[in-house]
Image (cartoon, rainbow, N blue to C red; front, side, top):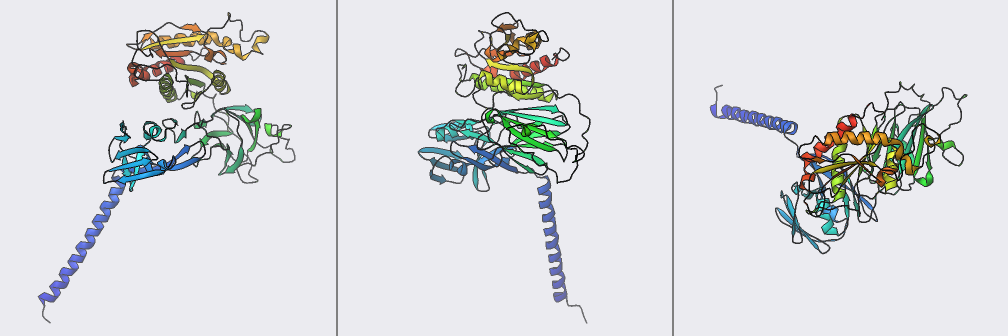
Length: 517
């Protein structure tokens, strides 16, 4: 049979086309897969963000786009009233919330509320057909739209609207025979409901809104590894992680619901010799039964490892003023409470970076805290040092830094270790015990601050500063200036200046090592 070029060549050509098409599909598939692996992802992950309103709380999905956190615009506005208008074009949208007009443009770093343009550090985006705004929207535009106070602390995933005043707490862990005792001091009365899950103890904190001073506490303890705050589902809770299974948990409330005591104890080796627990849950009137261990029944507790070195010293940082008490104000509108919070945030990061300290903040977010409340937070945390940061009028030279120790109303007469005064000391005089160390710390601070180029530093002084009076630790107040209606705060808000002050404070504390602190 002869070769028929028209028939056979046509079949061969079709085969080659099919083969090329398959190769093309394979190449495209490989390129797509490589793109997923190596192309920078636009949407990296999602999380939850909690809105605490006076009458309810709501959880919205939070998107992270190219490293910036975004919230969905329409679901967020629906939390605050009726969206009565929505005019969307290709690259812009106009929204009417009740009687207030909002205008946004895609990929633009600004928006308009009524006739006022507001700048945003990151642009408005459209993600999966949904308009999303960066978290800065909460403080820049939302108060104008809702006509309500908005309290948002940068770096957190929660916001407080209107007259919602969040509670907070301080944490302390002490060793006891055969275990550890956890003390949680709340700023308000709470109710606690306990549960266990995945080897952890969970303590639900009722209906209160919380802004924790720290979201996680890591312990150097053979029984407990960490305590974490979580409200990502809108339900505030503390999650306590033991180091091993088989431990017993005995929780109870004290002081009218403002203190949670929890003993974590290793069970004795045999049931027959098992003594009655001595934790707070078994005291007369406490009414708390032993909480079942998070591990399965019958699991024996492992022998705890030898305790590690001593726990890290606690530094309590106190940002001045807060909430309605704004403190001093500069000519360009900077408030003392905000400047103090900025400084505390930088000092906190500088100290944490040394891995030599644990940090406690006395003022969570933009909240009010009285003198005694600030001192109680520091004392309950077992603070090794207490550093209030303030700002105010310090004369014509700016930037200027002054440090102060406490001046008693009469000459200090209390000496640690001498007579009954060392056993019973009134809180109104407890700082007098630490005056020598406080003065040494003030000297260290002045020496380090004086080395900052362009900064005027006064010699250490003493004053009857109420914030220092009841603190049971070396304590020095640091004041930054001048912050007054006659001067701009630009030199004080400069990140370089704030960082140099933070470094000086870190070095001053390091110099206290070996001085009885």
